[in-house]
Length: 60
Image (cartoon, rainbow, N blue to C red; front, top):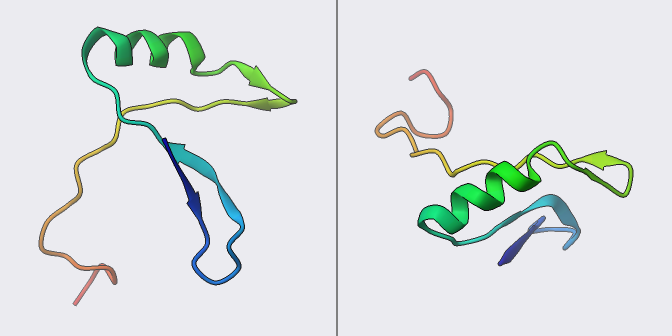
């Protein structure tokens, strides 16, 4: 698990990356997505592929 932090402040950005595969990953997503954790709703999903060739700014 990798807890994502802000580069400058070092504070947690509020999400983590967890590496899982197959039925274990699908079961974790189905079981945790939308569940309440300390008064907040969890959002659990698969990583989406990154778009190629556009860069960070969008239009050129």
